[in-house]
Image 1 (tube, rainbow, N blue to C red):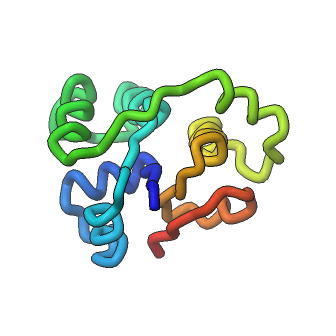
Image 2 (image 1 turned 90 degrees about the vertical axis):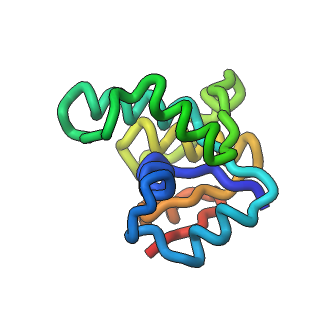
Length: 129
């Protein structure tokens, strides 16, 4: 199993937030490969700048340091993933989530999220209720 963490799951994971269920935490810790997309770094930075996401430190380099210290790999945004947008139905209007779905489909990754709207897409999800 290879996982792609939604932005909120990554933030909950690195901060030890209780909203991430123990079974999901174990799945992340026991997984062969866990990724955080650069799209999530973009989303977190944007929300931080807008005052919608409080963080203990400015996003850069803190988010990258946290990703590395937790053994999570970076997933770059590639052209093939972006090209999938044109065929992706508009079930969800959040551009960050839509791009994560495209990356998951392109790279055969399972998205870890609490966003049940993402179930409408053909990507595999690990939902954290």
